[in-house]
Image (cartoon, rainbow, N blue to C red; front, side):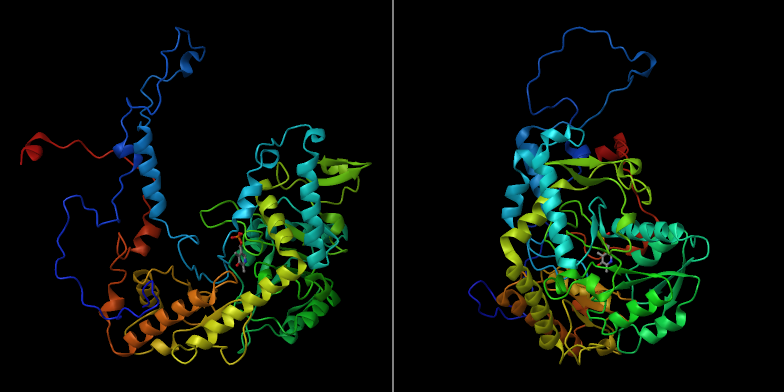
Length: 526
Ligand SMILES: *Cc1c(COP(=O)(O)O)cnc(C)c1O
């Protein structure tokens, strides 16, 4: 480890001799925090309110008969409660967050400042469009940039996440097939084994049958395999590019040609677009529909930090099938078209969402694009790839990497071959990273690689930050080789709740808080 002065602090420092339980249960700055229902008292309030004047409720039989029991706290108690809770969360603002495929990169503060401008933050979706022309124009400009960067003919802005974008794109494909009269014959969607789980889930959700394409030894999809799987029953392929092994699909153009020749469409999972922005336009590769995770590629907060946004770009072939709502310029003004009938072409599959989408994310994404410029966006992609390759090489001699012999894109993939026979698993290794103050990388995904560890450092980490991360992981690998199993088997030791029983948490989730039973008198007397 390095201390603040950049000097190593001896990885094997002995544990403190004095290790007594504290009276409060706190451990220095690591405070315990009860639920708000446990610490709040219904009779307390942070503000003074006048007694309401006498009135007769008009709710009749629906009027509440029991007290509301809302937890009441004073203002300082409220502040402490939420500040303490916020400190329990690992966040991109607290440290490097190497979760592969998730692009946990810095959210520039300029974006936040702009998103809080009242003209964007305080608009209501039901305001007359004449009063929100500026906000609508922002959506129009952002749409234009997304089409420019992807080579698309249309973009549906309303999907609210990547998975929602997949649904939107696949529904557009379904509508296009129906318009061709092939809605009932083309039922199969090809999905490579390495795909994100949302891909087959989306296809199945709207009634397609999923046909898996096995991954090749080298982690990429073979155009030949796609050609062989194609037939008159195939509606589309869903392919991630760069793929979830962190590799650019070298045969993507041939794959697009194969699916088009067979009469199907090419859906691209664009969650990893941050590796190729400004380098290649996906629609030029033959993509018909692709979602863009604004919350990954274009830096808007996610993972507990904010809602996502998953606009879907569409090729010329699918553009007529974009869903409502969308914007149209009528004279000088922008209008919101919410009903398919209003759009006049009637080919779309309907209305996807109530309103235009996540306005706050649109502002942040456009702010990110405009502050970077086209050269800056290209450099961000280059830096993402550079940082990932720096990790790949920095750990390549101590960890096994299934495809580590060649450059990766924005993420470096390792497997558990190097852990064989050591008694340490991918999970143990990840838990030991928590003790070192890092959020673990993506584990056991993609499924095609045994014990996968997928590391995406992202472009916003400095060289010093990635160096410390690499040195920490190297130190952990040396510990594995020295047989220091305890460091892993019981990790994390320093996290407040230690190692959770994840299986039990998944199988028997307790989703509702119930007040603890009152302490019986004889017990209380003890
Ligand atoms: C993140 C991700 C998704 C899903 O995006 P959400 O916004 O979380 O719904 C889909 N595919 C891949 C490859 C991803 O990384």
